[in-house]
Amino acid sequence: MISLVRDQLEIYDQNRIALLNDLMGLSADHLRRKPNPDRWSILEIVQHMVLSERELLGYLPEPNELVDRQRGLRARLSYAVVLMVLRWRIPVPVPSDGMVPDGNTSLAELRQQWDENIGWLRDYLDSVRPADLARAVFRHPVAGPLTVTQAARIAKLHFDAHHRQIRRVKAHVMSELGAESDHGP
Image (cartoon, rainbow, N blue to C red):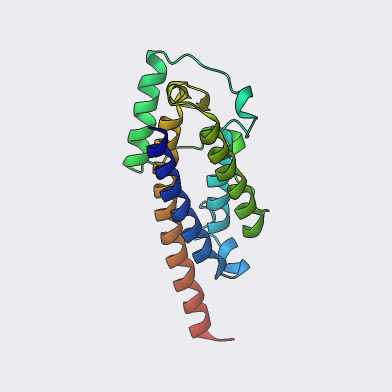
């Protein structure tokens, strides 16, 4: 089971790296430009993804400091709701202030933070026994206590939803900037 989670993490990491490499080719203006005032820029979306993951992982404590949490009926139902929201891409408010981006972090800094998240998760997986995978040591602000498998499922769906959002914003920004250059000075 641990090898399956590690394999899922590697696929997630490859997708994350591909996204970041794609974004590295964009200018600071492209990254910071919003499709409209009430929407996030590409940079804000990436920052939200990094912050959300960091919060889900408990801000990266030492693995032996993680505490088992009880998963009652409410947590099980909330987890199902979160999965449904992410799968169906239902817009919802950000569930925690710690996940709200400010847009003031560079893509290089976000990449470094995201690398730290993934490195921590790899270290965690290296330190656990198969029975530890059933421990609910992570916490989502809505879904409540989560096992590593559940946290990975949420992280993947969250990534996929925001990756689609980034593609839409990128297409919008590129067409908008193209239209501006067509009109000239």
